[in-house]
Image (spheres, rainbow, N blue to C red):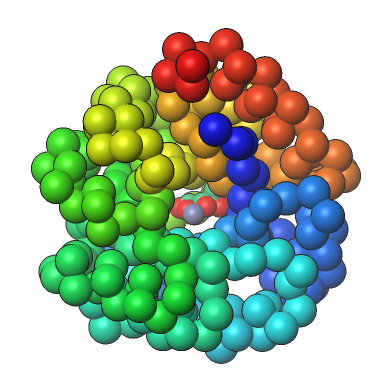
Length: 227
Ligand code: DX5
Ligand code: ZN
């Protein structure tokens, strides 16, 4: 099970996005882009036009995390634009099967995200429609928040659900992932790690990605779920 690191540009300099993407392009697996609409979450970031520009300039596949209302309407546009992954929130989507299938049909991987207080078990039957499950480890909306340890038992249960279904669904964690918390996430079952402030508030973003990856790989090697 390969560890993947997805730096979040939410903590980058928005006036220098291409440079900030470039800073991690040789070492990261994805570039995580947080789309927020000031309705689903109390913050406003960027939308499709900026993602389209990033797609031209970022040397990494784009991992779009849509924290928006009505993903049924908007998600497919990000996949059609060329995002490698498009994640929608379980709390916002009204027709998940249709929308996840539309994302896949447009050529992207389909992700389903759940907030810290949302259980994963009700979504077990949807896992065949999903390429990645995102477990938020903070309440979505802002970078730099404190990691919520209460999500770790759910992460273990999610890993068991994924294993029961054959194990092909990636398990992503997002929020407060840092050198202090990434090992706990890997031990509990995560294999894709989003890190915003731990990468872009560090002096050397590329070195931060490499350090996080090394830690996650060490912890995964000792994790019971990965054997
Ligand atoms: C928060 C976003 C995250 C955010 C994480 O709602 O989904 O991707 O950038 O930032 P850190 O890693 O600083 O918690
Ligand atoms: Zn995110």
